[in-house]
Length: 269
Image (cartoon, rainbow, N blue to C red):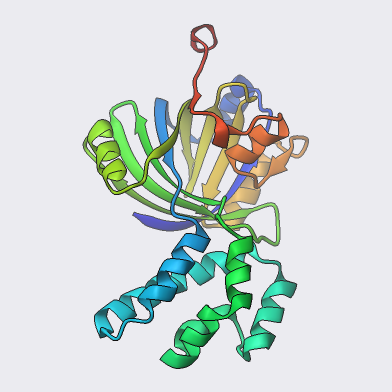
């Protein structure tokens, strides 16, 4: 299922205290899960750009139109990563109103822009999208494959997050399928998650190795998020829109370079 959610994290919580407050306001407990997670990097922006430069030379209409759809996705990611001043400079240089206008241009003009050294340099400076990845996760007996895109640009503490999630039947077989497609898993992670529902908000209490527990609130309604922050008396807590990798980086830990992130047996017991 695809969805665009608004998301925040409340850091360094006392789990028992938060759970008592959630019960008091009538939130519904959905269960506790021990999660096993494989993460996979999607191809780099620059690699996808180089591939599309070649594919968009095709005279085959079906191949060209398919590549055009892929280019639109790539430009959406690039637009989110670039500062506004850089985007304005690109648009001024090519005489367009916004980056996505590139896909509407005539073939010859489109090809000229994509083959321009300036455009190649832009993509080369943004090799990867650190805010988009593929995740295979087993939560007790439930297994899901998710593409997650945490948007970089925001106007408040609330983060926009796009997810496409599907259920799969086998953790090992899905991993084999992805690796056969060339998406080798980067790392393995473990965490404990306690889930609650309040109105249309999904509330997750996450416990990761080496991190203090945090609470994540996901909802498409800003007002419900703000209501929860008030009801749970969270004004004194640190409220952020960072992803988990960024939280680890604050501790000097780069989980992108750790092949396994597990609990010590004593920590889980």
